[in-house]
Length: 455
Image (cartoon, rainbow, N blue to C red; front, side, top):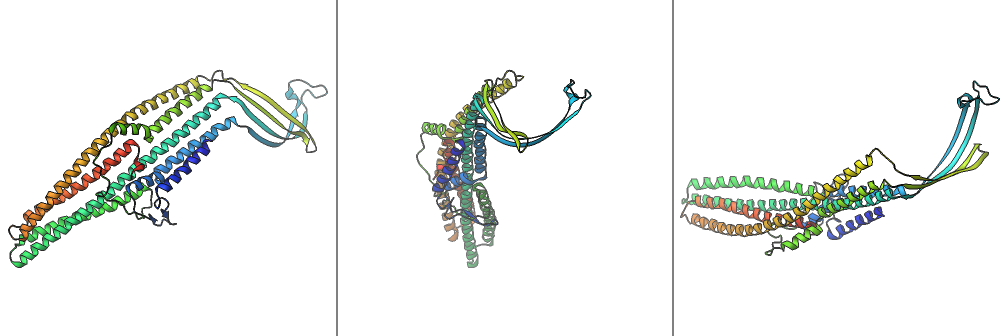
């Protein structure tokens, strides 16, 4: 039943992923020979999380490990099911009468050769466990382990979703940083044009042109680095999504368009959700239950077991001289003493139960801490975004005023260059603040166990 349940859960997960990712999971196609993978529509942050949870290498590996655990249930159940076999044997034997240990009347005491005696034996065999509480306990233990495996697979999928979400944000940050450097480049070119025009008109100095040229060169170097970071972030995103490195992925969102909320979630409600929904906590609960079932199964090995067996077939000296024969019996097996091996296994399993229980309780406390920490990060990041936007607004105003003074010939371009450097820094700080805020959103979603529910 566990195998069928596991298959049902897998198919249901496939269906959910297909519904949640219309045009993404179903539209991703890989050409033979390592060709491009095409995503039919722009990929949102939530799409990236769900796609990675569905098809990343770590998520798939965890699902296959869960399938192995489910298969072990069938193996454990085999101890309770009938065991049927058949065989056919042709056998020949000769006997030295001296090996009997006593003289037979009419035979040489020194030994005579009897035979050969050739026999043909064809029969079927059946054995059935009537009662074996230890085997029943092993089946229950295997089922608990399979459930724990599914929970662990869910946790691996959530971790893959977190990795993909952060990779998505890094790609967005790289795009935003590239856009900022392009804006810096436009400003630097503009200032160089003004300096050249003033020098040509005789109202400027060569020093202003040199300063402007140096600023253009510096911004160009930053632009090259930003483009390289953008390309590298795309590779990391494709790796996190489990896509071909030749795939083309278009981001549906930018850092400035992602959701920003002015309200904070309730802390106690978030902690309660984390304790209820986090897959790593559910996995720890199931692992503890499986360890306890295993301990009970070992203890059950002390109990007797009852098995019925029998065989029936034909036995004779040749194909035309054979008779129907059979054998049957009932066997009761009672464990008496195994050199304390079973007791050692029980102690080992009890230590494992205690270990998992300690880790589980620590994990629950860690979940509460992570929720509170994520909420602190989210609130701080939200304030940092507001501060960075105000700083950018004032810096843009400073650059505009300095440029107007430079264009009017009231001052050189030193003030404009200084203001543009400050503007460069302000743009970078806003990008960092926006990226930190979105990372805090992902961190809070991870803390409460809802990364795959991101929009």
